[in-house]
Amino acid sequence: MAPVSLDNPVIRSYLFYSGVLGLKLLGTALLTSKARYTRKVFANEEDARYSGGVVKVNDPEVERARRAHLNDLENIPVFWILGAIFVTTGPSASVATLLFRTYTAMRFLHTIVYAVKPLPQPTRAIVFTIPFLLTVYMGVNIIIHYAEGF
Ligand SMILES: N[C@@H](CCC(=O)N[C@@H](CS)C(=O)NCC(=O)O)C(=O)O
Image 1 (cartoon, rainbow, N blue to C red):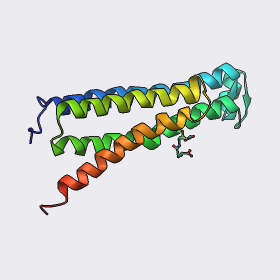
Image 2 (cartoon, protein in one colour; image 1 turned 90 degrees about the vertical axis):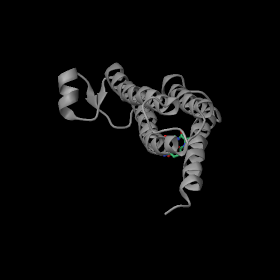
Image 3 (cartoon, rainbow, N blue to C red; image 1 turned 180 degrees about the vertical axis):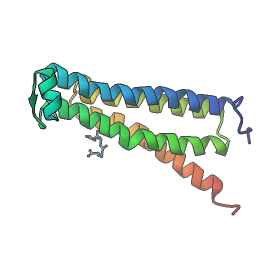
Image 4 (cartoon, rainbow, N blue to C red; image 1 turned 180 degrees about the horizontal axis):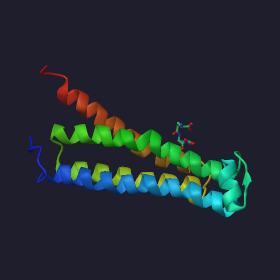
């Protein structure tokens, strides 16, 4: 098994894509802010007063951006946790990097087809399912790898 060290390319790849996904998650939060300020609809009285808008909690565009953000929050932390354990199971650098890269690209696409340029289904379902299955793959590998020895 490759050493658990910062020189290990699998770990470097995991850390790189984890950082990208962290920034991506913050960016998705900003999509909600953008939708609020563009449409001048806010969740709180003080925000509406300060920005010259109205309180509205069911604006379709704002809610769409919020759901995209929530979906990231439901999925990306699972990648961070399972990915961190997965790298300790000794995957090959090429497989792990392909997995992390594909996961990251699909999560970007999910946000784009959900909140930036909505596309008809099953587009979003596909770009959701691929990274979902990649996290399942990591989880199953972790369980198989560590099933013995304790
Ligand atoms: N919390 C999700 C669980 C299932 C899920 O994540 N489905 C994907 C593919 S259809 C999705 O993009 N759901 C939309 C969403 O989370 O708002 C939901 O309510 O839909």
